[in-house]
Image (cartoon, rainbow over all chains, first blue to last red; front, side, top):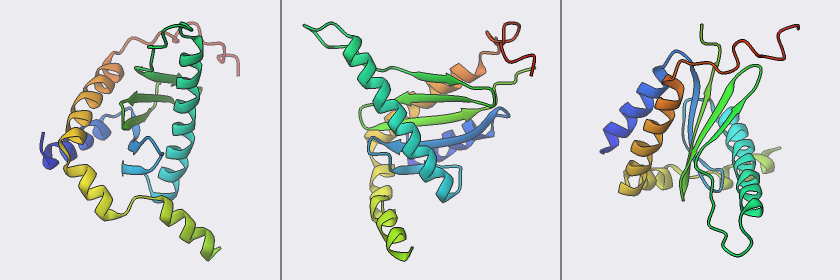
Length: 103
Length: 58
């Protein structure tokens, strides 16, 4: 993948009619890419990074005491207004907010 | 207020830092992999909440 392909991929994803926002943040919650304005990006990055950290904590705590190998693969939160999807990796998080009203 | 803004700025990545991340192979691989996963998740049209939502009455 090249820089242009990265740009195109994010554009394609955000062009989906159900997708309201696309953000890529690092594990510290710092925004790398976002389709939102600066203040909303900061707010969402902060909040969702905290949610992911808490989720990972829960998963680790639930895991086998002797052999803690479990980890978060995907996080999906359904709300009345939208759906939050998070694809985590060792260094980055892809966050997508979508409208779940599929007719 | 100005100081708060400054603090906020420091916490955020600089354009230079972003440029380095955006150019790394590791980041490209992440975007490739994670967008495929998310696209598949949002493209599945089946809505498991459709007929069983508890919020209907509102």
